[in-house]
Image (cartoon, rainbow, N blue to C red; front, side, top):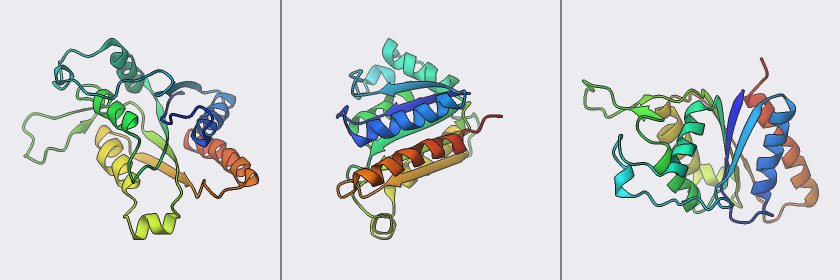
Length: 198
């Protein structure tokens, strides 16, 4: 299976990087092909120019590479920190530029006015791995878990991915080395469970 992994964290020594590599290693070990895109390392430009907005707009060649990888992926893994209940700006920009009409979704003719797109992605499973310093209970009860809504309801469901999975490793700031080792093991297990070998 061809798995696209998107990593968004500016520090190459971050725990997010370790999580992304743990997931990738588990998937490769299971026989999958994994494309790992480290958005910061490659200097991905998150700014969406006006020319790219239309479905048949002029798309930057680097962005088109990302679009092709997303369209061809049979599974998607996203790794990023929870920053103010949002993905980092570089990842939001990746969504703006890559999860685009004609690639990830389309609006059908004779739409009843609901504006609900038809999903085009080949992938049917997505796994999001987050880090945070907020306990899950507080994230749900006080903030409504915005990352769950963003990824599950506002992006992947509308693009045709029905099997959505997410895990938050928290609190990172007070975690021990032993806890982080266990979390990395869990990240590999979650990736293997999300994309079983047929």
